Length: 104
Image 1 (cartoon, rainbow, N blue to C red):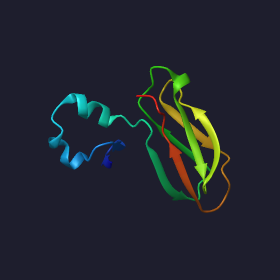
Image 2: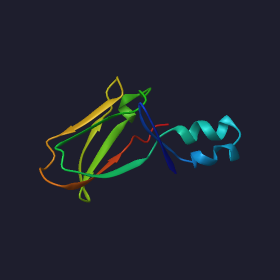
Image 3: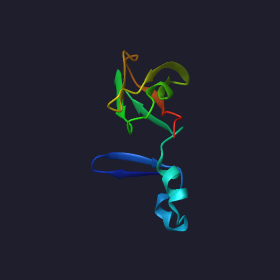
Image 4: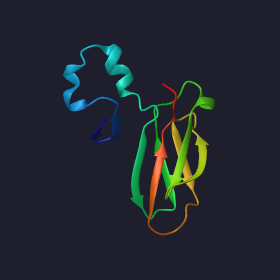
């Protein structure tokens, strides 16, 4: 697992991107670039968390889950534009986990 940061955002890879040459076929690289099931953990004092994922083929299969300080808070579907948003989080410093969709 490796995260590649660029000017338009960050992308988690399910293979070490810095050694992607070890995985020469698209059969491996394509699925490795999919963020299916990736968990992003960070600390924040924000009361809103939002993000964007590649637009899913079937939004019914694409909930994003939110965990705050180890407690599951809510799930929300990814919009047709690829965006998701959680609002009304507790005030103050907290550890947030965003679990990205399981769809491929």
